[in-house]
Length: 184
Image (tube, rainbow, N blue to C red):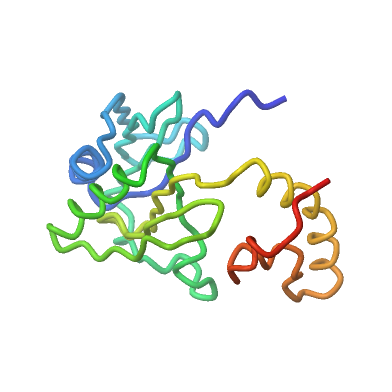
């Protein structure tokens, strides 16, 4: 039924700052701005600036600046750790990812990684509004994807029963991939 994600929208503290930041560090083009004094869906009298950025391959990342609302706080849900909710964006090469990391760090932006997840490598950082972003480079082989596909339902069902991490794909983080048997 779903063709693709039309856009993903977040709140930002400053629309212009956000457009400039995403252009500078992630090379996203500014493609559309919509501004109203009334929310079309709810009819609330609430002025906003809605900006849209090209995230590549038809993907659109959007933001709302809401000047009449309380200032943003990074902690939307105090019970959820800050590493949990994030937007992961794919890049083609490690070189692109490391160049982005260097640009961010040159301007004093803290970057975690690269982190090796076996099937991809990634870096993590926050945008000016406090949204956690991840840049990822896929490194999976067909064998790795096959192994993960074979165990996904078993892992999910075990998790649902026990709420303990199933060990079916432990090879992703314990270095045992080279010591396991290839799929049949």
